[in-house]
Length: 187
Image (tube, rainbow, N blue to C red; front, side, top):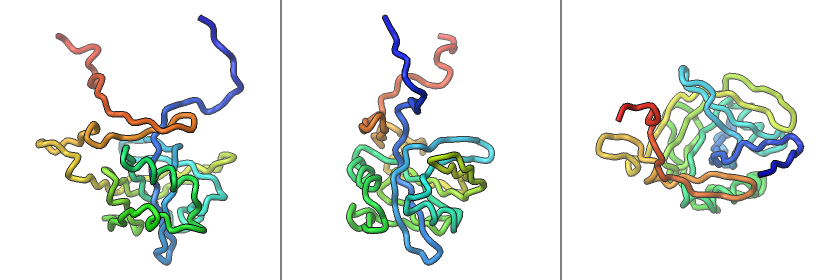
């Protein structure tokens, strides 16, 4: 079995493709798709998103210091793609994709009501890295759609049918393969 040597690149796939909602100080909001996002700390809960400076939403985040990460599902794949290729400078993506603005608990940015989970974020630091700037943010509130909870109020990932992105393609995930620590658990 051989291996090829490729030039250095971002090959950490698949990645979550999320809808990020933002708003300016006047309350004008926009949605855009981010595939470069992740968890960076559990206490305090923190996440990151990486955004190109030329994106319409970039200045909104810089000016307000707030955004919402909306997890995506199989049903939101079309809207997720659309919000990643259309600019908010020219299009009202909320209206075009028939998405509902929810009122966030702690930030002034609306969340996507059709999303199973919304993470309300406040920027703590911006790292200027090159093609993208990374916004390091504290998660100040989380809202979860009740329809994705089981009888014990546990979030059911399989009900959400989450979607991920890999090399220009979207995939549905959700099959549970094991639980944390199952490889060392006594039988």
